[in-house]
Image (cartoon, rainbow, N blue to C red; front, side, top):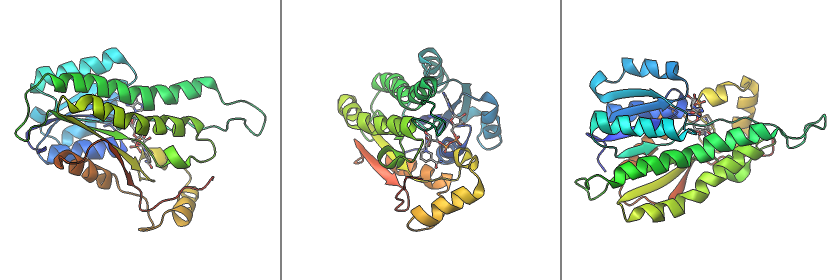
Length: 258
Ligand SMILES: NC(=O)c1ccc[n+]([C@@H]2O[C@H](COP(=O)([O-])OP(=O)(O)OC[C@H]3O[C@@H](n4cnc5c(N)ncnc54)[C@H](O)[C@@H]3O)[C@@H](O)[C@H]2O)c1
């Protein structure tokens, strides 16, 4: 699918991978519906994207009504929805039993699953329903959906039980959802990133990040840049033969326990 002239909804667009994706798709001529739970974080997109090709919407991906409204507004404003990119996510961590003997808080588990897994599916189902109602594009497709998992889906570190489970869930849903949507001309691909230089990683002490890079990243030995993620999203949109799969984007990273 050509990016230019299409309409893309990007969640988590206020920061990191989502922001880079919104900017790249807009730079290649797409109209962008930028969604984030933190409305303020979306405002700087206005400096980079022409006003007639940008809609910013405050919404939580875990909220059916809010995402439904964002999709409806995308259709009302731009007349179609061709691309949906799920980047919203949280990485709250705790050990299953803390060193002081406290069990993992169930509220934390429920929050991470609600945003990363249920939120991803919520966006998929509502975006796909809108895509399924529109005409085929010039390449015979109706839509492309890109999800964000993580290397932690397979190699979760200490404290990542909820995060890893949520990201493994995203990989798990990729094939059946792609099978469900094939008859509607919609492809579904998931990216499993390694460690990227975003707000999520900025919270870690610099020496911790450097130690992870030195010990676990194969080559090139550095954090990924958000635009390297965005460029893979672009490839997925453009290459019609990519479907129903999860692509690692991690410079050969193998996460150890800590
Ligand atoms: N940065 C990494 O190293 C890395 C590695 C693997 C996977 N990921 C995944 O990539 C995705 C993007 O993460 P990032 O690194 O850009 O982090 P980030 O913190 O920079 O950006 C995440 C964005 O999601 C938004 N968000 C959080 N909860 C939301 C909700 N309920 N509804 C809508 N928006 C919400 C946040 O406000 C934020 O703007 C996440 O799913 C993350 O798990 C990141």
